Length: 220
Image 1 (cartoon, one colour):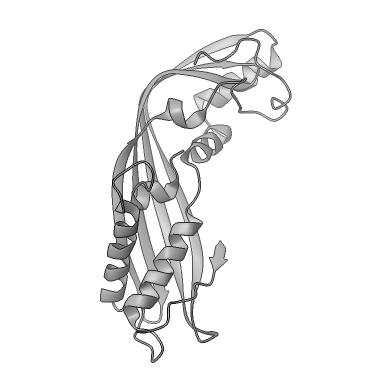
Image 2 (cartoon, helix red, strand yellow):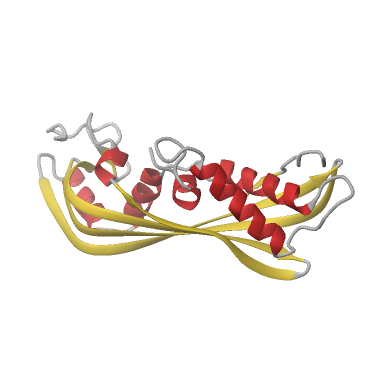
């Protein structure tokens, strides 16, 4: 399944061999080049930047499907249909949405540690713009049970902030298509959109502020 990491850095599998690793390395070069991390006696800035971006990539192992479902559960035409169908057993709603864009943000603080001491703390901020066009969905018993149409584009941006000196730098940007029908895995009763729908199967089956401390490599 596609993750936020895949959108920001590129897919590891499937995808071009080494694409994600190459994007992480390129982002690390931008980070080091911006002077956000400085050379240390035990490790050069490039090594520290690679350690930071590698840790950020690990933190972004968040499935895009969870981002969509979380947003739909907050406010959407799908949520309205889910509430109606959950309140009225046997009711089925077909929902069509011409176009919508969902923003999503995530931040994590990453300590840069050299020989057991924190030399600086950086903030990694990720922004996604998820754009869906011509969405057609089926909702029943408070659950999204099918997507019959819809195209999705995801654009990701990674920024790194430091407090001394105060600055923010964009180190990675990507955009890619996302197949929502594949990502959501709606077989087996679909996805619950309202509280209490988890234990209520649909009557018809679907048709088809974290923190981390990277340990930089030893300087060569």
